[in-house]
Length: 212
Length: 181
Image 1: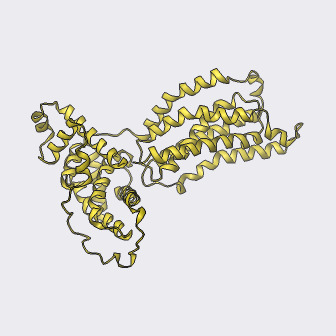
Image 2: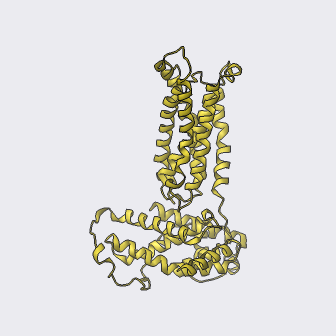
Image 3: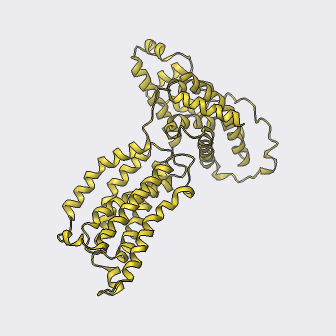
């Protein structure tokens, strides 16, 4: 088939309308969310003292951080799904959750504490945190990559890593309602490790499945 | 230059709102430019330029299957060249691992920047043979025999809708096979 013939064939398919990447991503995430929710409610569940915990600003801060991560990474994912975009223009959005967390840490530092800093950082649930967040993120990551295949990212590995951050942010939002460690130091340490792990898996998978 | 790119943007907008003839004209208009881009990319990497036509066809297929990622309010050319660049890099990565010759210095003097493509069997033609029979028949009917969708439907005793589906699936499959080869 020479190029003129290929052009004729492509032009004949002008009626084709691809699904917008944002819609594809949203539908895929909605399809996968029940799996992660099921994992959460069967294995973890909301912490029993959640009503009291809601009065604690550091408990609420966890959700601000994880949701900011999920939302900013989702926005950057969508932006990166266009062939001409690069991380340099919108990548700073990903600093928003880090900024909220940093503010939380300095806030906590200024308050009198009964528990020493290292104890707050190590916490009691680090192991659960590092396994539960990646586990609940996996169905979301798989779905996100599936949806993002509608896109055309210039750097598939980077796009995959950001999709991993978004999935980890969503999974961490669930996890945060289970975990009794509310110190921003705990969040900055263990949530970050869990997110990095999911982002690495996303980069690895993205490099393969997001090429177009 | 500027005018040409504005024209492309206009044609692509018409194509997306359903004007197949505008789409055909656009693809025809960008092809020589894409050919020059592919040749330059190959020459810079010290690769023979005779395979540039495969890259051009890769780019055209990607443009088609990813055109919903173009923002209709933005100019078309930057989007097009981003895809072209990606496909040139892909092609070099695929074959360039063994070759380290740098001919940057005389790349500019290489002949044939505007020459017509050689008529060798393209990768697309090769992969076309591996498609399911229905898709291959439809693609061949439209491409080689230049028969319209309606006539193809009559010829293959299919409905027009089924021809459209087979046509699109065929193009998508072709692209997937070229990507994963």
